[in-house]
Image (tube, rainbow, N blue to C red; front, side):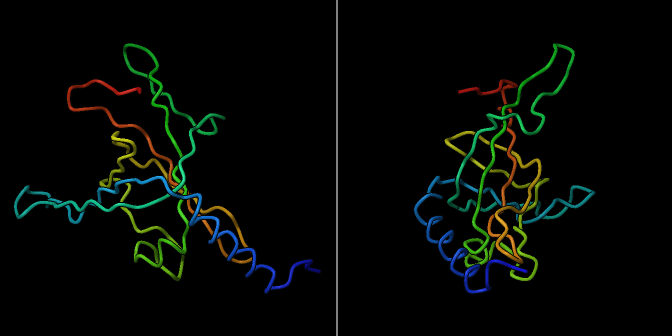
Length: 154
């Protein structure tokens, strides 16, 4: 026996959509890769588009996923963040599939710029279940190193 009727779930989903319009205001630049260079290194190569999207940033303060890597010098803390996105917002802008509610990005080639720092996606997961569908998706982002070989921690 379900305690909530479909209209209750619809109201819940609408309330979270409305809350997202207020809370999910962190501007992130999605550097979307538009193509991959062919294996022989021939052809026009890849191009990138910068898209401004809005979401909610959460630091990994609970250490809910591993953020360290080991090299000859020891362990390096790559301090990652979560980037929450509303799936309806993504669908409205053509950045998610309406059928499976999946964010259409390429974790291998796309990058995200948050507060001037570049991040790479390490994974994603749907979240915020409302009856039969997820409401949000979060992307785990790992800070990238700069071209100088230094890592920004600020």
